[in-house]
Length: 105
Image 1 (tube, helix red, strand yellow):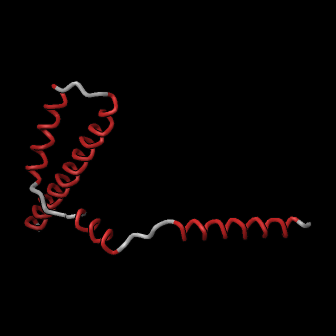
Image 2: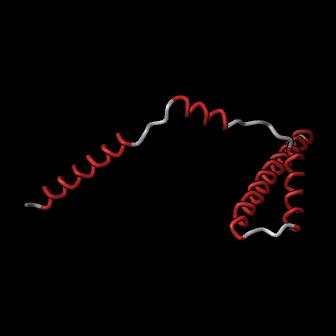
Image 3: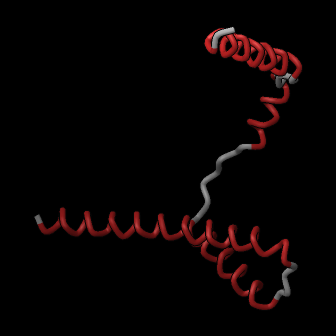
C-alpha cells in the first residue's frame, strides 16, 4: 500500500472519531446558555471603590497566613485589581492632559 493511501485511511479514521465524539458530547441547551449569560453581568463600579477594595486586600494580605494553594489565586486577584486601577488611572490622566492641551490651544 502506498503512503498516500495509508495517510488517507488514517485521516478518515481520525475524522470519523472526531464526528463520533462531537455527537456524544452534550450540546448546551438554550437554558444553560441563558444561565451563563445571566451570571456574566457587567456593572459600572466606582474607581475609588475598587481602590478601597485593593487597599483592604493588601492590608489583609499582610495579616493573614495564607495556605500555599491560596497564594496564587490571591496574588492573581491583587495583580488584576492593580492592572484595572492602573489602566483607568492612566485613562484619567490622559483625559486631563488632553483637556489642558485643548485649553492652551
